Amino acid sequence: MIDYTAEEIRRLLHQTLWHQTVPHHVVFTQSLWRRTHQAVARRIHYEQRRRRALEAPL
Image 1 (cartoon, rainbow, N blue to C red):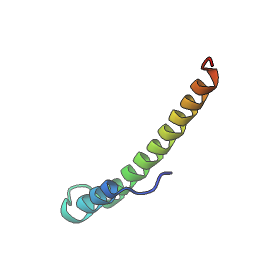
Image 2 (image 1 turned 180 degrees about the horizontal axis):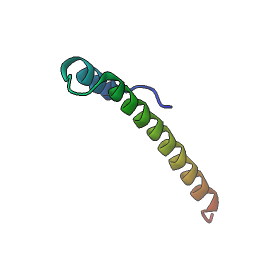
Image 3 (image 1 turned 60 degrees about the vertical axis):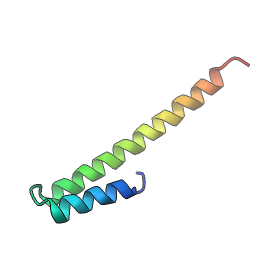
Image 4 (image 1 turned 45 degrees about the horizontal axis):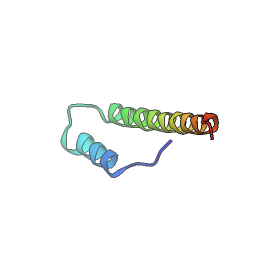
């Protein structure tokens, strides 16, 4: 999983402290899902770049 970004921390604070319409467990579950998805997307992106670099003609 990726680290918390300043934007993610801001979003969590806003949703939990100032915007009380969504339950806290939903906010944190969405944050966990988002960070996990970003980590998977990052890994796939780097794997594709590595694969393309290995297949490129010299």
